[in-house]
Image (cartoon, rainbow, N blue to C red; front, top):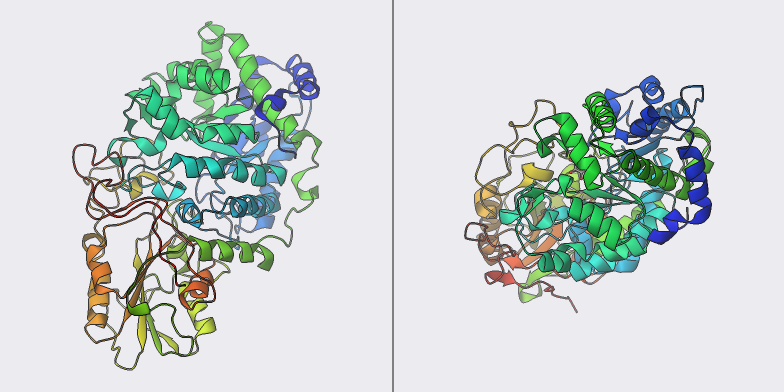
Length: 615
Ligand code: BGC
């Protein structure tokens, strides 16, 4: 696949093939092309029967034993069904989509990169493009064509549960990365998806799927700006946000989708809805579908309700509520992406180069992830030069995230909400495993995998220094929100049990309240006279004043992913710290009704861009 400028997506050769195909397909097949069920709810036979254009995997929805070969087999079956031609069905290859948002992290054995917030700290656009290429190769190894990435959210409030999906609170930094990640992914053969259009990171109080209340000038400067370089780099798809702008749902926002994105900005690819994103748009499902199609959405992520969507949309077209011209435009855009990405020219998934290939989870790929970990670490305190640590020293390593690869990967890893423990992450190194490899005198006490209770204070008398690895448990989306403990509102829920059962992560950003065991361990060790280096594993800046005060050294490690060894690379001075805060670091909980539209701006303990060096 070559990277195409947005306008070139509609280049004449492609356009001709699209028009030729469009002239031959039925309304049923057109609507089918616009429909994206979830794999658990649609069979290959149904893909053909209903002419389905795309299938997705929700977070944690994995075939067979969740190895690349299982994914290729699944995609091969869907693709083959989509390509069986008969009187009723024209062969159009199916586009399969996944959330490869920090590597192809749903699949066992994948290389898992730091979540975006850590990559923002690295401040290295070239690295971002290489990560895009590696991720794309691991997506292709699974026979998959499309990733719902990059997230171009500009997270303005760390209370937001998706803060870690955002590179930065600064739209300039997000914009510097946007084109590079799109190029990296698409030039290596995977369709990218800029999301979530638009304003997802600016909701009042940082509430997931909430309301972004601001004037148009600010929306453009803050949240639309990063899409400009993504479109220039030829991003082929854009996903709509589950949030609202000034009270109006983005999924029904004709002005934002049709007028601004497609009209003014000239986006030539297709727009996909988010998971059940049309549900809240209207009480009647058919009305909701019509409003969303008329607002400019081209493909619909309707995981379970795809049959109702197809029936509802067909009725609306027959009643004239949705013009056939709009359907044709949507399908033309989908076909254009399928042509422009080379999907029509590819053989079946099993026969593709790189399918189930040895590059997946390879040492070469993991080296890129380890480099990203090194560059993402931000040094916030280094009293008395406690860092770098001496490789020959007797070092006590402890804390619940010290030896827990699941925890260091965070959400959207194997499961939607992520996993804890080492067993579920195949390959890579925990932070402890990285330390052990370079410091023979290091000892692990407790520290993950449930070995000893969190908050334990080991006897430190025989040690020269302690490394305490603490932080958040994995979470994703609204379950990571910090707000009053009300259930997450109806909307996206990849878990069985339905909405209404989902609680936020907590109601404060204060680590000492969320996880008091961390402070207990840090203080307990400090009291024994041993200098403590605290490593914080978290998806966002937290209020850590007390932990900072009790530690000699303090490192923000974000969610480093599978290659924990990158932490030891820097702790022991083989590399210097180069990371800078991609968000200002709050000294207290944001206040007021919106809890500070800005991440505690005014109360920042460390400003955006802060980060110490060793040398
Ligand atoms: C998220 C999207 C994601 C989609 C598919 C939704 O819940 O908001 O970011 O791409 O699920 O898994």
